[in-house]
Image (cartoon, rainbow, N blue to C red):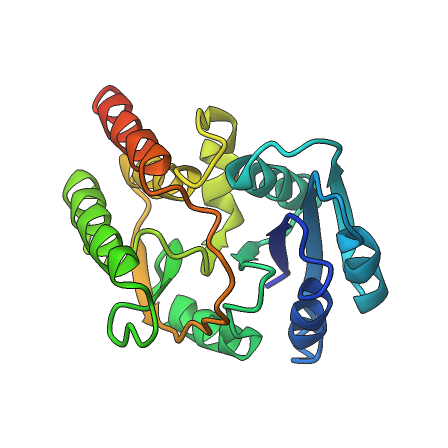
Length: 225
């Protein structure tokens, strides 16, 4: 199974190289694409030096837009699956084999890495919002999705080929949109336990703005087929 790791990044010059090296160091034959979403630092150079192929957004378009760029690349290049992960070091590359094993065992279309079994140092507000939005997404999709906000995922490219051109979001709400649209088309989602590494970095998620975006997404999704 040809698998592409897609890493959306903005201003992660000091972190992304280690993440890329961690993925390639698994020696699983994975390819890595870093989508540089309008960075003003040396993110692209650091990613390329570590062995990644870099796709550029000249200006910041949002995490969802960066993911879509990576998805379209995976579809165009004929990959079978995509792993998405963050470039700030919160996602441990050594968990990728767990995703691949889970995909083989349960034959789901999407595997989401869930942190909710052991929240560790996750901020309390993040715990509450993740649990709340995950309940809502689970209700909408009719599937048990314990951590719908997790960006660490494995997705069969056949899902992306079917839905990526329909995306209407460009920010953090894209991760929920993907799950909802996939469920509407009959694809299944399963979960695998992961551990997130919290380094104290400031989150780019705006609890008010991004919550409103999620509410708007939920309202829109009522009309999707």
